[in-house]
Length: 239
Ligand SMILES: Nc1ncnc2c1ncn2[C@@H]1O[C@H](COP(=O)(O)OP(=O)(O)OP(=O)(O)O)[C@@H](O)[C@H]1O
View 1 (tube, rainbow, N blue to C red):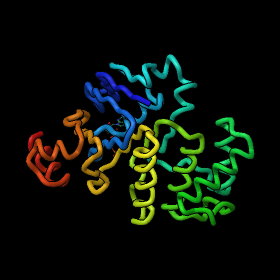
View 2 (view 1 turned 90 degrees about the vertical axis):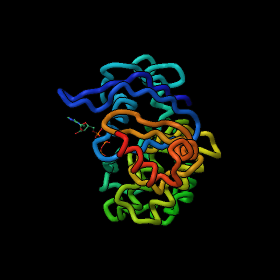
View 3 (view 1 turned 135 degrees about the vertical axis):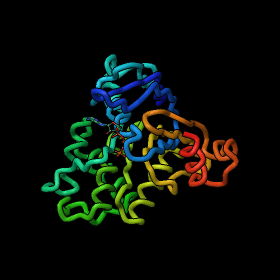
View 4 (view 1 turned 120 degrees about the vertical axis):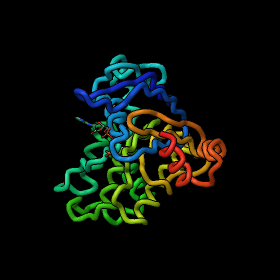
């Protein structure tokens, strides 16, 4: 799916969270890098239709959410920063409920749940209540839930923040593979430099402005630096 963000400006009262942001996302692992308060979550709220766009437009394969909400939502998978699982239900119950909302029949649903839990190394937690899972495992269940209907675009708002290294690496690797091997359009917001690989498209958001957008290695070359850490220092200094 192509996601085309055109001239988006968004404010909360007098606070401008996004200022004239334009960005086209295609199939692949697109990274949105920005510090706290840069405007990442605001962009997610606009992409998912939770907030109305003040100025500008966002198109999903040429259609806005207002024009085609149901069809766009069917093809989107979203993980927000806050945990949204029901902690008093088991992993299976959380996932089955979401599968049925997406129209999967019980046989398709259980097959998909087994496949996803296996990929996320959680097969032994099928009947565990989410309340008993650690943070890393809960995040993996959230990821399984957002993948249950095989979306063609994934929006992930800082999905690995606060997780142990094993869960962080597993989640990053599963999503990276989906983007590269199955052509899913991923938008991965983060402030962790280690999650940026040199071949990935990288967008850098600072104070609501998109200050850079290109393949990471091209940005390193453009600014004559060797890694994202150094790139960051150069850009912060320049802005
Ligand atoms: N509901 C709101 N009301 C008022 N101001 C808000 C609201 N949500 C965000 N902001 C402000 O908008 C700006 C961008 O915030 P946003 O949460 O989008 O950034 P972020 O990059 O996601 O940061 P974080 O990583 O801390 O979540 C900040 O100045 C923030 O204080």
